Every structure is written in structure tokens, then in C-alpha cells.
Image (cartoon, rainbow, N blue to C red; front, side):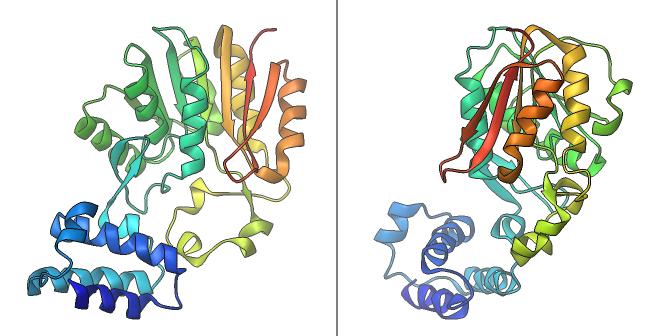
Length: 281
């Protein structure tokens, strides 16, 4: 195992920060060899089988081309769930876990009705369902391929969530249901902000789930806010993940659409990453 560790470190040196390479090593050995962290420590002097080493070499080669480890392995973890991912869906981020935690702590009704708009892998909808077992949770997305992943994740985690095809910008086609919670992590990165993005995002993750035109950066939020105003219950709540640079504009948008108790929340890095509001005072 020691020589395999040295191989990984040598091949990835200079391409990734040291701490990220350390993380890759733990993830790779657990995925290929089935060894958790403790086993990796105990077996550090054992020889990795040639078949397993070839698998590790294949993973390392793809990492050298900046492909995200989550896509290489086809899975990731999110809020205690193991989820399938592919280039058809965004890789769930820790900031989105913080959004779920905020929602779970927001004292929703026991039998609340929840809608996740732009569900992707289903990570938000499934995490909420796991924590709020009596909730009726639905998720929508414009991508049929994303919905296949979301349904697979629901099945493999034993969670009942209704996923269906719908366009964020044409929500009038949805059934006129009342929800206690509507949540969305829609596309919010402006085209002009692409220069700040890493190649592992630009080259592999779905653009349709990431980017918005510079002239219409809030177009998805505006459509969702209009839908939510009509379809939230009297005390219903709306939660968004947002562009850290547009929090003031988001507050203005929500206020102008008649929402109350608007609150912007910072993520663990101190960035304005989430906003919540209520349908009533």
C-alpha cells in the first residue's frame, strides 16, 4: 500500500493541493479496496493487488485531466446519504448541506408538503425526506437524465420522493398544489463569472445547471418567486441557495413580490449563500 500511496502522491503533485490529495487517497482506497480509514492505517504495509492497482491507476489518470472524483467513482455523500452522480447532474456541495440543515431546523409542520425545484441528483429533496419522514416531498427538473439519477438515488436510499419533469421558467404547467416549503438551488453563476471557475467544473459539470446570462442573473429566482407566492400555504416558506454577489438584489426581488421575514444567511466560509422568506408576516 505504501508504494501505491507514493504513486498517487507523485502523479497528482502540483495538480492539486496537498490536503485534497490526502482526501483523494482515502476515497480511492475505500472505493477500490473497500478499506475505511482505520483499515487503511492498519494495512499500510500490505501490498495492493495488481488488479486493484490498475483500477487506481485509471482513477489517477482521470484526476490528472481534472475530472471530478465524484464523476469518476459515480457517487458522492451528501447529508448522510450516498448518492449516485453523473455529468447529467451537479455534484452536491457542502454549502447545499448547510441549506438543508437550515430548512430542517426551521420548524416545518410534521406532515409538510415540500417542492424542490431544479432537483438534479435529488440531493435536497432526499435529504429533507430522510430528516422529515412524514413530509410529502416532490422534486422537479427539466432534465430527464437528471431525473433518472434522482429516482435511482431515491430507490437506493429507500426514500419516497415524487420526481417529475418540469421547466422552472414555465411552472404554470405544474399542478396547482399548496406547499409548506418550496426550495431551489437554481442556476445563478453569471457568464462573466466563468473566469473564476476551475476547469473541473467548467469542463465536466452541466452548464444548464450552473450559468445564467449577465443581463438576467435572477431570471430563475423571479419565476420561482412568482410561482411560490401563489402556491405556498399561508405560512409557507421559501428557501434559496444564491449567488454570494447578488444577496441585496435577492432581498429586493423577494420583498417586491410580497414576501416577509426575509433572511440572508452566510455559509461556513462567511459568504451570503442562502436566503429564506415567508409567505406571511
